[in-house]
Length: 167
Image (tube, rainbow, N blue to C red; front, side):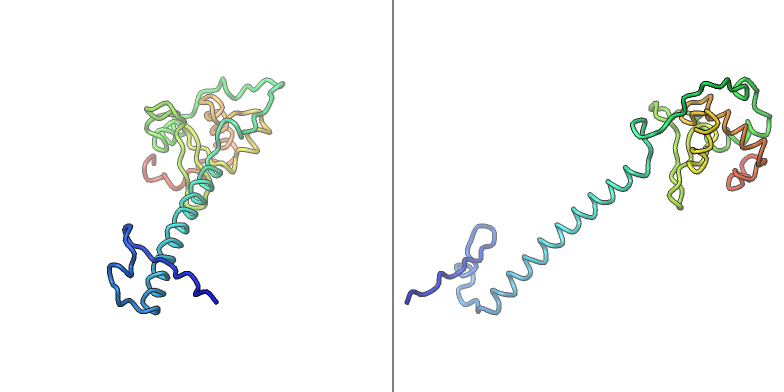
């Protein structure tokens, strides 16, 4: 009967047996387990990083996935000017305006995984209502119109977290 082929354990291209000829089977096993553990840690880290990047991409709306209302009705709210207190709120919420200096829409991801969008930082929980009303909160006009609607119906309460900046 033939002797089974001995497994070659290498490190940096050299066989472990050549570097340490008196390695016992137990030491070789420990070394293999150390290498396996490191490999699994690397795979786990890459999987975690990939999952995190994927879920972050899901939480930030892009123009490809945003449903816009087809507005057949004329919206008269857009033509109204913002009240002074709402102008202060919008400036406090987003000092750079609707767009960041690099041209992207100003957004902020909250701890509860909702997103504040645009000049007046309209929370993503209002997105369905905005679509229902015919507003596109990803445009500056639609963002202001939705902010005005929220302000007229709910007052300044939705912006209470930045109250210290605009009060």
